[in-house]
Amino acid sequence: EELMGFVRDFKLDHVGVFKYSDEPLAASFKLENKVPEEVKERRYAALMQNQYDNVVVPALEAMVGKELDVVIDSVHEPTSEGEDRILFARHQGQCPEVDSGVVIDAVGPEVEEVSVGALHRVEIT
Image (cartoon, rainbow, N blue to C red):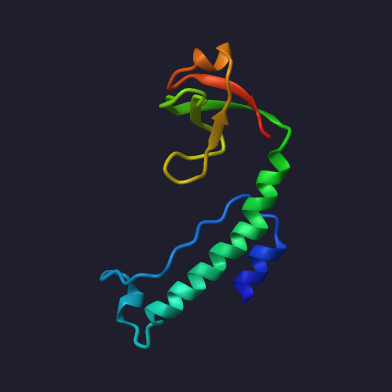
């Protein structure tokens, strides 16, 4: 509960959450009365929801209307008529394979010229 309150009450930029797991070389490996897996899972899920509600959502809402430079990571080409080209990107505060990303769903000549690895200026909506 103390950790839940900390995540809720303090203005954190990012929160990483993991469940304890035994490591043979760690001193805690030899401790008895381990927390059951279902309790760890329940606590993990509650903390993830807490950090989503109190860290992720406010951070995303604060970005709306800002212009950012993003690096294009991948491109989804249209597979049918009328479908837009979708670009997947990240800004300097996002780590690949760890953080969320920026999805660019747009049309126009400036998007058609963008390729993977390119730096592109976007407005967050």
